[in-house]
Length: 189
Image 1 (cartoon, rainbow, N blue to C red):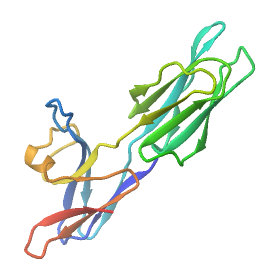
Image 2: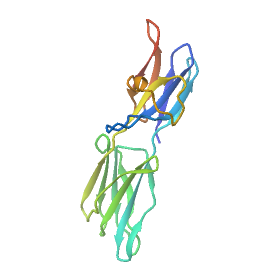
Image 3: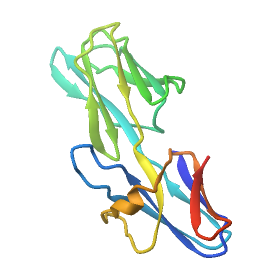
């Protein structure tokens, strides 16, 4: 799993919240992770965790497979046959799918349904795929970083802070800098 690195180039300690943007239907942004970084220091936070599993339509009935962890998009999986009555297997074949995509191709002789998870919560499922069919999940990371003072994980992000946030992906670094006229800012790279 990729991590998120926070670098503090300022001469004072900082707190940085990582959160997801609220849904467009009026939800709220909730702090997911908080980093406390000393002056001129750095820290790493665990990035998002993803998983994928499948359900196979076998002659004996529907059989669910175990969840396989993945670093996140992009990723390409292939479903390969197993001798019946064993369920097919899910194999990671490439990390070169399109940006924000998890692609799955069914090479098994039985119909399969694919399930995608983020932070152990299902975020998508395919229809049942016949042999030779493919499905693509478009997974957009919704993570943002903002400077905070007293926000804790699980707290609602104050709207004024959520509006000043910068987008960040797992594997990236957020750098806190001091502005020439005073104040602090965050840059992601």
